[in-house]
Image (cartoon, rainbow, N blue to C red; front, side, top):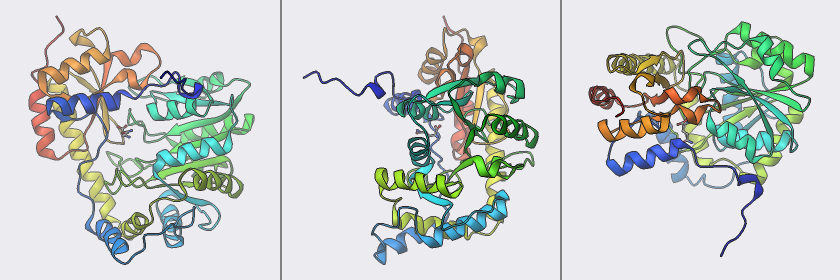
Length: 387
Ligand code: GLN
């Protein structure tokens, strides 16, 4: 039977993140492609969820999440993000930051609305924008600094632009927006009455003493910002699918309506697990940063030694490496050859760029055990030029 598929998905393809994971599994390789996060989950988080299951807290929660968790999130937002949010009206717990993003786009925009997407971008952002029939306006940021310039942002706007998406620290570049760059966004958003949507899932993974700055905490942005966070990376629970949105009340209410329709609620016992995680002493986060910084350095030094020049990331747990000198016709051919020759999988840079710039790049994830990273680094030295 040939049944026509939805027009909304006609041009969408599964991400190369998936392709490389499957290809890597076929050869039993080391997967530095997908951001899987191999670190152990803190015992308190695991036990919080197990206890909730064993004590039969297995039913639906309110669509916006359990009250205790929203109150703990509000305290965390004050402590770590300088954000004041009402846990009853301005915080919605969602199935991951991905669920938050889908619910936010569905609730806040109409088909044809435009949204500025800085490039390199996370492919799921682009494809979810497309799935919602929105119009992505690309704003290419140039490496290695990926500076967000006000004039470039202004020239990315079109008559239908309604929002600007900010992923900081960024997947895939690790770029962290500075206060000054966020002020540029604030000026442009105020001049054109735009919303700002953030993805701050890597907020705790920042290096060399850098501090994450939440866009909503800068100037007057709070009133026009939908801030999206998640627990996947912070507690190494990428499979749990738990995140949340912070937004002014009318926006949060609309997002919660869609969250209810799409998901009913985020998994209740797992919400109890992250509640325990949020009670962790602040040194958990210091330790997390130090652990990831060591992994970043280990992988970046190894990439440099293997001739895959890394663009050292300031945050998140990925590094873009330049494979241009190996002479492969494009990033996918390079990534597949790398997997074949070394058994190490990365994601072709083209998955993060609409323009050709990604064709010289491969993204590697360093959220792996040190021993796995060391083995990967040793293998990367076997990579040979095309032909
Ligand atoms: N965020 C992770 C990545 O960029 C995982 C994404 C996914 O599997 N969709 O690799």
